[in-house]
Image 1 (cartoon, rainbow, N blue to C red):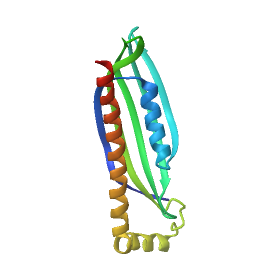
Image 2 (tube, rainbow, N blue to C red):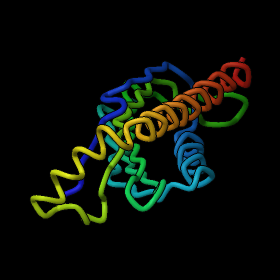
Image 3 (tube, rainbow, N blue to C red):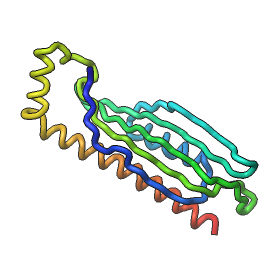
Image 4 (cartoon, helix red, strand yellow):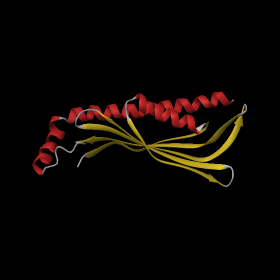
Length: 165
């Protein structure tokens, strides 16, 4: 069985903003595609509470092969809450809370080549003592990618502040 080494768990980015949900969706999807991740949309829920307040949830799972032994994984939940429609310059936007939650990990031995008991033992030793620096480098690279994605989301949502005033 492959092994997961979490780099970030439940890292949250919370923003109150005016936005178009399709733009946020496309921004996220395009970022994963540009960075060579295989993307799977696990869930999509759109809920209307009362008549004007909307909530939603989108779950993404993204993975990228780094080498024959390691994959990068970014699981991203995008939650929309307390969302109301607003009209600005004849366009319909939403204003509400967005929460991006990241679970980020390295998946080692994703091809399950080291599963026999002796191989599993050897894998544990080599992962720790031989390839430890490589995994540290991979962890840092993955953290940087999540930071870049977070910054792009923040930058994009801050642009709406200037568009709407």
